[in-house]
Length: 115
Image (cartoon, rainbow, N blue to C red):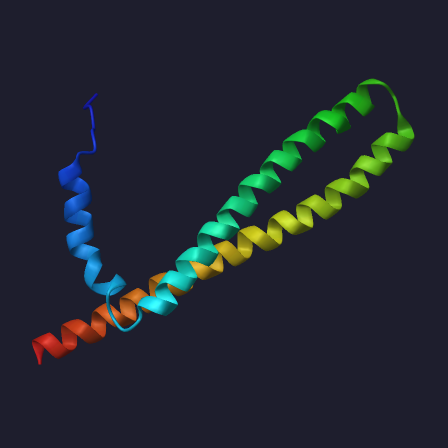
């Protein structure tokens, strides 16, 4: 198996290829979308932690035959799942918006350069 290491040169090359978009007239919108994506991703990670804690409580209640706790935890799960789905969907949607905006900008730039 080949060992893959990321060097400083790799990051310099990536920055060289992408800096023109992040410094263009679209930069405010791009940075806003990127900030929202990062915030939503952190929210998704936090929700996964909460779901993991819920998993512990739920299966402990099952093990102890605690019927009231089981139904309460199912109610809690529905709320956690709803919030998780909303965060994940909006994160994916904003990622796609950023990708589409970048592609539009890149296409327009290449057309101007080519023509």
